[in-house]
Length: 284
Ligand SMILES: NC(=O)c1ccc[n+]([C@@H]2O[C@H](COP(=O)([O-])OP(=O)(O)OC[C@H]3O[C@@H](n4cnc5c(N)ncnc54)[C@H](OP(=O)(O)O)[C@@H]3O)[C@@H](O)[C@H]2O)c1
Image (cartoon, rainbow, N blue to C red; front, side):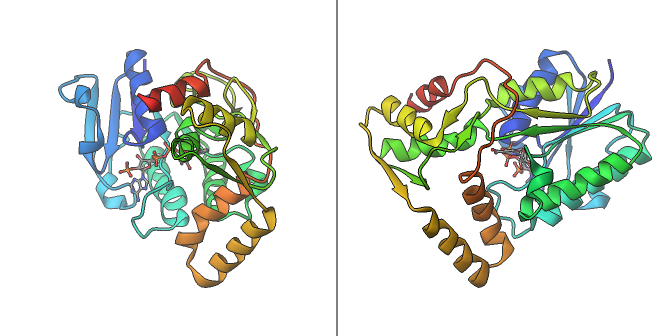
């Protein structure tokens, strides 16, 4: 079995990928900028080697891919407030990794983009991710692009609203999504090491409307039926204002969030974890 380099191990998906790599007995190197975010169980585990480095700074990751067969990257901006753009991180930091992978003769590069990312290039986040996908495809390396819709971690926001008794939804709440648990998606990412597929669109086992997600969250939180629909024109108006008065660092994440709420985001179903169980975990 080959050695794997994982970039993004301190994130939601990356932490499950690390767990899955260890479960499958794969020797793993992780690139981390803040090792305090790693679970304590990693310390002293001989299967994992830690490289403290900044993927945005090429010099700090020089030779990171030496002896590595597969690179898996989940690196990207979600909630980070480092003052960097999607082009700095989702594109350029992954390019820095790709250059190292090519230099060291890595066999395969597995990258996590977004479901329908190619059709959503008008959004800053998708543009940056898909530019990297283009470069990866041209690199000559074997590759696999994982394309998830929403993660359970994001659905947690609905539960946090439900706990306070009201869930706010933009539009009529009838668009559909099948979010996936990190552990289910991690298994797809790790199994891709030996798979033949070049692109894997993926969602979770159950498809919901946003109204159903809100109802599930409210029912687990035991808070009745407090769903408030905010008319779609208000979200367009908010976006217009943000685009005019803020930088892409501020409006980029909001633009992405409001866009996905106004479209269906349903991928082929994988996994076994249910959203209700996830909300019940959050309740504890
Ligand atoms: N969340 C979703 O619903 C969703 C849906 C589709 C696709 N995706 C994509 O899936 C990937 C993983 O998502 P996630 O929810 O696991 O994200 P996450 O929890 O924020 O993890 C992202 C990882 O990237 C690293 N990173 C971010 N900015 C960095 C920087 N400037 N320098 C170095 N490292 C940096 C983070 O390191 P730190 O821990 O040190 O910040 C973390 O390890 C992302 O690319 C995301 O765009 C997410």
